[in-house]
Image 1 (spheres, rainbow, N blue to C red):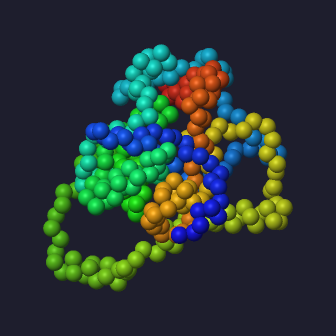
Image 2: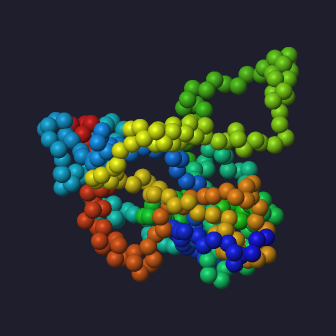
Image 3: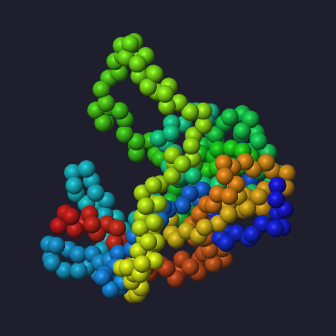
Length: 323
């Protein structure tokens, strides 16, 4: 393993921290994103490079709407919109906690792949390294996955804690009512196929069998083509504009910084940890770090006036569509 002193410092911090809890066990951990957004997203600008702002418009009254004129509404199955206030939402919001509360440990194969939504890496925080290793090794030996829930950014998530290669990974899960069933999509009932056809198709599959997955098959060729196109036009000084003016709102994950996640894991784990990855030079991104506990309240106070209008805009499309 490389000398830990020679490893570069991470450029970002964990954007969430909390504690894995079950029974009498309590293990502080940090959360890092295991994936980052592809680079195919583009900004909307005019022909002179000025960034475009977002405005909401009511076609019924033929006017632009201000933040004070926008409220949040829940759409019913019959198309009716029920307005919900900030105070009412606060009354049903999940209790704010820093715990990943595990309620059960189940065999990994019991979780259908369709439930997995987004992966995160968990690293030990504070002096929890030994307990972290013990939990990771025990879970990996037993082949069990921890199922529980936690609250992040005022939203409650279902989560599966998975141990792999000495590292704990948190996989957020979809709720059961988010999944379609085969009946929902009109999948026909299973019928037994003729033996000769199965044999013929088996030969076709056998011709393409490989013992290992080629990583190149997982690469995004479309994104690579866009990057090549943009780089070529930039070198030719063709259609290059300088963006000015209002910035677009950030996406859900925020602007991601690229870090050496393996270096972060090595510093978080003990020197004896056995970290195995498919590519030792792989990078991973993580959303912008959350403010420290002392700063969080100040930040929330500063952003409170904007929070109502920003989140309220999300219902505008539904309201406008039914006016």
